[in-house]
Each structure stands twice: as structure tokens, then as C-alpha cells.
Amino acid sequence: MEHYEVLIVGGGNAGISLAARLLRDGARDVAVVESESVHRYRPLLNYVGGGEATMASLEKPAASVMPDGCKWIKDRVVSVDPGGPSVLTLDGRRIDCSTLIICPGLEEDWDATPGLAESYAAGWAGSTFVVESAPRVWPALRDLTEGRVVFTVPPEPAPCGATALKPLFMACDHWRRAGVLQDLDVHLVLPGPSPLGVPKADRLLEQKLASYGVQVLREAEVAGLGSRGITVTTPEGDQELDDLAYAHVVPRYRAPRWIAEGDLAGATEAGLVDVDSHTLRHRRHPAVWSLGDVADLGTKPSGGALRKQVAVLTHNIAAADTAPLEHYDGYTVMPITVARHRLMLVEVDREGRPAPTVPFPDLVRPRRATWWADRYALPVTYFKRILRGKV
Image 1: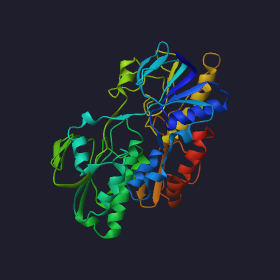
Image 2: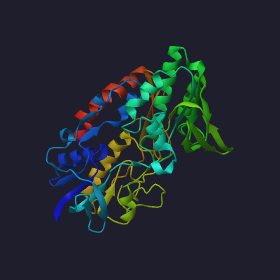
Image 3: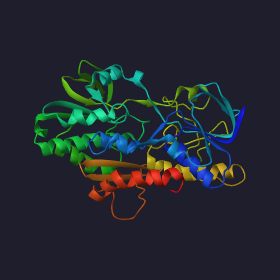
């Protein structure tokens, strides 16, 4: 049986940046299980859907981001024994370890929304959250001149779900500049009563939605799709939105099934890993830790949240039972493009309280400079520093 001191399941932002940080801090025996040969900076997918980025700008060979000194196991985990701990891969490899870290990300739950997969295949629905669909979103939205369009924000858990507002605002700004916005009937389906649940940011977003003439369905969810129509469940009952020109419907998400089957999940319907939300350690299996989208941390997942989680987890793995464990405060960040070149940055802690990383300027106020940082500076920082364990 193969053995590693630290085995990380998942080679996305969480897994690679954590592996790099551990190695920089002196770890000698780190392995990452990841089946994908392409690594993606996923936040740029929304800009692909807004016509402001290409897939080539966010993709790199996975081999090029794997940290030096890290063993890459190009395979997929199909089951886990948290008591070992050990994992079994699709190729039949049993891999043992001293410390197991679970961060494979979330999976699209296509079965949770009847008709969604078929509507994607038919081409009249899609989203920037799905890699295969993202390049087709902008061509579909760009050329619309009339008709009804629907956008959705997914319920939690979702990979930075609030950024589903980005394609909506970028499309509306484009349609306004093209002189056709008044001929489009734009709807937004929100899972909660307000866009983010952050009062200051919500006030600004509500003003933007009103200025674009967007009709908002609140505390609503998509129940199903079919025949170019969507059934939306609201507190007032089901509502049918028919004759759609296009629907940007983000799938629901859940953890991989092997997490629940391996006694790693808690009580959440999505099967999230049951960890202490402060220390990131599993509540029942002390050799198991988790971070990122798949961990039940009581906060909205984001790349910015990962930077805090990686710092806490790196310390806690080294400290284990010999020193006090550090605590993650639930910090997360929601970057929302409210127009083609203007973006607000909303930073909060686990309780939804403002948690700005800089005292000024006020980054909640939409700015061109913040948009430029999100679109151009952060991708460079991601590949050159974050994935190398330097942030």
C-alpha cells in the first residue's frame, strides 16, 4: 500500500495552494490526488460569459501548477476510510496516509433540477459556472434584441454563488449600450430575500437592478425546465416563465457521493464534510481535515476565503495536538461586476459583518480600479503567488 504523510484529495485552488504552502513550511511527503489534466482559474469563467475573457486565459496544464516536491496522483477517489485514513481510487489504488485533507470541490447536481441538463443540451439554457457551457453564454446573450431572459443565483452551497450576478449585470450593461434593453424582459431568481444578505451592498445592488429594469423573484428556486420555459417556486406559489430567449440557470451543487458514503458528511442535504468550522478538523476523525467549497464552514465559499483557510490549516496540521489550533473566522469575499467595467468587493465574516482587508477606500462602492484588479491583477497573482504558497 502506498503511504504519504499528507494526502490531499483535490487539485483545485484549495488543494494546490495548500500543498505549496505545506511544502514551503517544511513538509516532506505531500501528495495530491487530481484526475484533471487542465487547471482553471474559475473566477474568469464569468468574464468569459460576459465577453471579456477567453477560456485560454484561465486554463493551464495541471502539471505546470503542481508544486515542486509534490507527488501528483493522476486519479480519482471513489471511496475513503477515514479511520485509516486511506482512500481508494478509480484505478484500484489503495493509498494510506497520516493526514488526509478533503478538498475536491462541489459537483453539479443535475438530477436536482428536472430538465436542466436537457435544456443545456438544447442550447437555450446554460451558465458560466459550467466549464463546457461558459464559452457559449456570451454568443447567446450578445445578439439578443428582444424577448424574455432569466438569470438565477444558486442556493448554497455553491462555488462563489453570488458571482452569478456578474453575467446578469454585464449583459444588461451591454444591452443598454446597444439600445435594446427596453425590449428585453429580464428576470432574476434569488434564493433569498436580497441579493447578498449584506445591507450596504444590497442597497447598491437593488438600485442597479431597478435601473436595468430587472424583475426580481425573491426566496425562489427553479423547480424545473422544459419547452423553453422555467417553473419557479416562490412563497406565493409556482410561477411559469415561458417563451424564453435564454436562461442563465446555475445548477445546484452537492459534495461527491463518496464523502457521505465514507462517514465524512454531516447533516447537510448537500453532504458537506463535517468539520469544526473554526479549526477545519473533522469532528469525528481527527486525522481528517477539509477546506474549500466542500467543507461545512458556515460561510459562502470563495477564492478569497481559501487564502484564509489555507493559512489556518497549514498551522493546524503542523500543530496537531502539540499546540493551540488557530481559528478561521469565516471570512469570505463576493466580487460583483455591476457594469461592464465596474465592480464592488463585498468582504464579510461568518456572521455577515463587514470584514474589509483594507480600511480605505470603500471597496463596496463599485469602482473601475476594483474591476481591473479582479479581471487582470488577481489571475496573475493566482498563478504566480497563490498556487505557489506565497499568499
